[in-house]
Image (cartoon, rainbow, N blue to C red; front, side):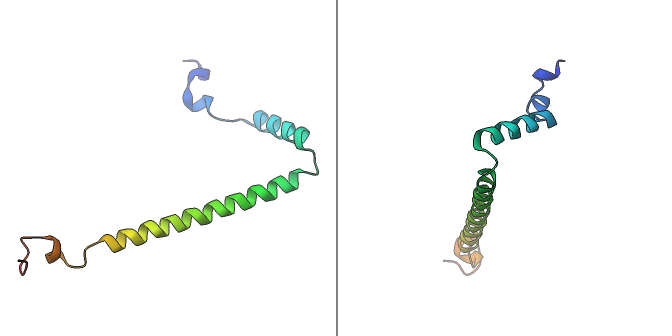
Length: 82
């Protein structure tokens, strides 16, 4: 089977591709603009991780609040339920 049609191999980026992408970015933005771009990217990643953690905490809170405190309230066959 030809490796170009294999989806696992076709999706991978090799060393030469990364070098070519970096060279194009350097040509487009210039050396003085790259640190600013990297700083902005770092802030974006940090903000994304913070929002993701907050969303996970909110989901965990809603799951813990949704759990019934007493089984007799939800189970009609439980002793003591009317």
